[in-house]
Picture 1 (cartoon, helix red, strand yellow):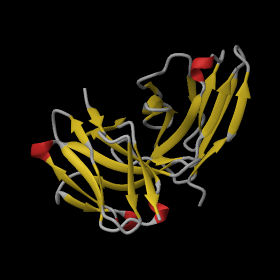
Picture 2: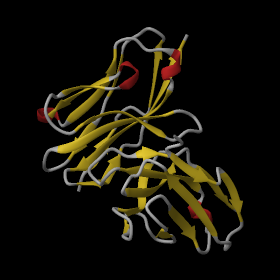
Picture 3: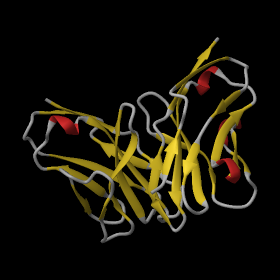
Length: 114
Length: 112
């Protein structure tokens, strides 16, 4: 069975600092990988996705993520964080051919200090 | 373009009451999903509908039923609500089951 681990429950960074949110997955074959962001009281918004090809994927709002098969990781990065990035971030893994079997991590809450 | 619309946004029920959560999408998506989100648990799939006319159980289906009314609408029903079903419920849709899912804003349900 597939699984996702987000090791950091809560991260605090200063505005303008760089950010890296960690995601490790467990899946037997090549997975579909996603990062979603959830602002308070809102639904989840897709930041970026990896299906195949280039392992460095660009997303919205200046985010990027890198798929590293050897480390079973799909970490999310941003070079300079803005106060509006404060939210909860979810990594998810899907099985190729059956994306309905999305498994979500438990989320990382990002706080941005001015 | 509204995307995925969920109603109601908030609801308080008493134990044993029934309730239907509504979801509609205007993106002509084939697949629709219901999740629940609990603190520290991430999102867990309750039911999904790969295409109009089909529904299947997800990870946590007990206590719930669904209806794919047409291509646009997918409802979730609690026949006899229990306090353990207090949660935030999200509906999502995708073009097909192997495409990214788009989420509604959620229904916050409290069962006393």
